[in-house]
Length: 236
Image 1 (cartoon, helix red, strand yellow):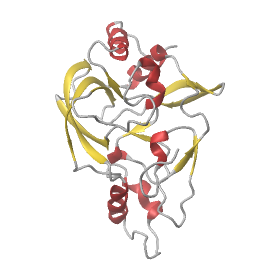
Image 2 (cartoon, helix red, strand yellow):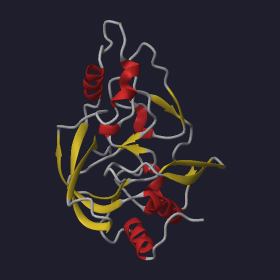
Image 3 (cartoon, rainbow, N blue to C red):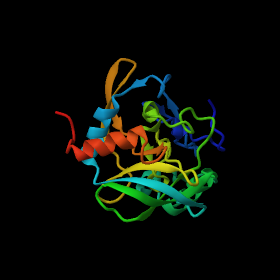
Image 4 (cartoon, one colour):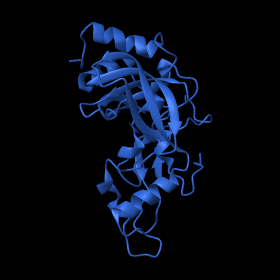
């Protein structure tokens, strides 16, 4: 599948991947392993326990607004040094690299969340992250079910995007949509390792920290809420 952006940053495909070489180009793309993530197998309860062991804040949120003042890489600027070069089209500073990166995400948005329910911790009643609007052609995007969690592995806030060639998936935000969001002590999107199986091999990858849900009674929300009530964290 070919991504629609100019150089085609296929980061939303996520996964165990071979990142594209970028010594002289401004490529953002990476090449995902065949079958990722459709052939991922994971146990939702175990994944939830592993994430809860690391999360400081877990919130059921509603997207109140989408604005165009999004940022790319500003929370992790050093990763963009790979773009700096002497060629005529190459940026000469980190700041120039970040401006060029932002231009590549022409469908980027700043996502404004309002907390509907604090499931764990109290990280404030509103917060923002940067991502993209959902793409209807991405499987699992608009039909969230607990079995779709594998489509939300290895996500990242665009503001924390670690650099070109990163095989990650942007978080998404749909106006009026509900999401279950896990955050760390710095109130950033949680990057906690969870256990999965991919093509018969046991792996650990960052878990589904920003997942669209159907509201308070959604199975993923209910599972996480019940585990918190039971005091369960990482499995032994």
